[in-house]
Length: 387
Image (cartoon, rainbow, N blue to C red; front, side):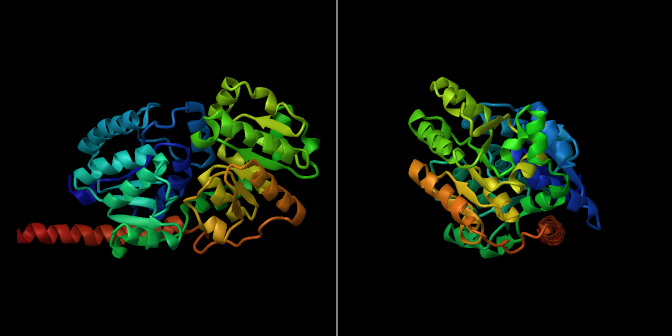
């Protein structure tokens, strides 16, 4: 198959990828000429019910191929994705492989493509926490090194890439594709009161406002000496503001393992199971504040203008702190409490919407990538003719 006739393989592997790929697929289908795609789900995120719900929420088509990799250690998961992804290229060909974010599937599929001399397109390049203890940081750095086109969400990312020796012409500032999904979905968001009613919880408890909590990072929830004080700090916050906790299975399991489940049995906590995209969007958009360790939520709260307290020592999304509504507090209980009290006392950071977070990022990607592929393929044809 002629490379220009092959599809652009778009890869999703875990929940954060879905919100990034959905608008890209729409933009590719609406571009003229249409950019032909093949959607591959690696199955790294292996909850079928949650996957189906998110695909429906985002109007994302069912994957053309599901590799069904499932869970495993980082090494096992990365290796298994590579083993199962290469035959997809053998069967369907690939004009390019487009990967997003920083999950194991991102690096695995990029490696396969790079070794097959297929262009690698990385959406959300150049973000750095500067903490190599985070597996995602390793995935970001290595994927960027082997990518041919690096689409960035913020201009500070270009300094990171330059520092790592990546030629400036490979990086293109297009904005944040996550915000495309947010803007397209906001009108369909499910209000917090509806979620509480469905869960059999008393929605009148949030009439005076509420906060939203999400905690899932291993560094926060896998160790009793870290998780316990965080929960205690949140409980103190809940004495002033009811907190709706979308409780991640990992966090629930660890609370049970550490004998701490009773700590979330508090009048100020309203506990919900993990929520779909539209439900989380509704929770966040109506919140007084959000307390989280999620990367994506830092961006979404900035776009929504909702104060965010990030319970992490670092962030790969500094623009949410410098320009947005995000405050980075680490895991010290007193710092968490102080930041929350500051928001309750003064309304929190107003922030502003960063450049190109305008809902049109996927359009810019489609336009640039089409032109880049034509130039790349013309260059390859010229090299072959002169060989």
